[in-house]
Amino acid sequence: MSPKLIFLDIDGTLTMPGSNEPPQSALEAIRAAQRKGNLVFLCSGRNPGMLEPLLQYGFDGVISCAGGYVTVGDELIYDMPMTREEMELAVEKLHQEGVFCTIECKDGAFGDENLGAFLDKHAGEDGKGNSEIERWRKALASSLHIRPISEYDGTPAYKVVIMCLHPEQLIPAKEVLEDKYNFVVQEITDPAHRCINGELINRKYDKGRAIERVCAHMGIPISDTYGFGDSMNDLEMIQTVGTSVCMANGAEALKKISDVVCPSVEEDGLAKAFEQLGLV
Image (cartoon, rainbow, N blue to C red; front, side, top):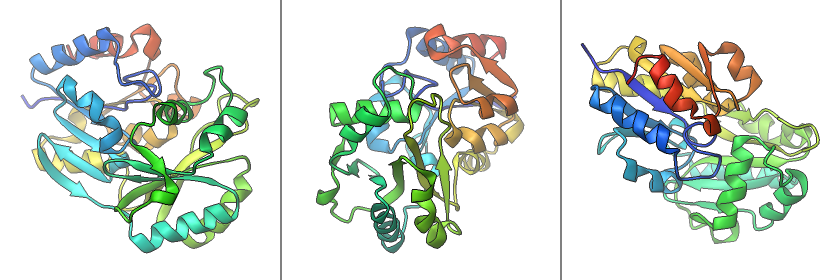
């Protein structure tokens, strides 16, 4: 019998948003699933540099950059950065409309210097922002592989993270790039917090197609895959895997199409779902 492949989003799923420390219950469930012969992958919008602290827990592969950089074990099976021209065009059009940008590269990121102040003002400090906002707030606070955008050195970029107040600010960039890039905008969980956040992701890949690439590489059917997520950049993963799981703290739109809704991160959701689904 072939192993089951388990794909885990990080922020809001495996860990509290912005944290690099999974609950002990989640780690024990992952190890029990692996002892049973299953393989557990990280499947994240984070770049490899930002997810590196989690690699100590012994995952079997990594889907990073929302599907743009994929490894199985130590083997790189997919690598698709943006072209320099498209990245520069995106940042130019977004900046013209006052959109805050972060250029995500393989080992780090380059962000607008005043993004932290913008988030403090418009995303709130009460933990009610969605998991991607909270990830960025904490990453900026800890300077986790994030340098000022003025220091961008031409390193290949995989996506551009966007934050602004009004959807109309994205229109000029969409007019020139939407045919090649998907503008993934996260669900606003608290109307009091007006911050719109999302990312430009190359239409050549997403988390779902990355999972298909892993399955093809390993010769394992999609029916033997499980995906766990919470935010809208997990949509294609949830639509692709054999069994989809959304966290209780996740986006309502994602819960509606998932096979299972499990308890939140704080309530040991992964461990409970692993047991419910017979993965341990």
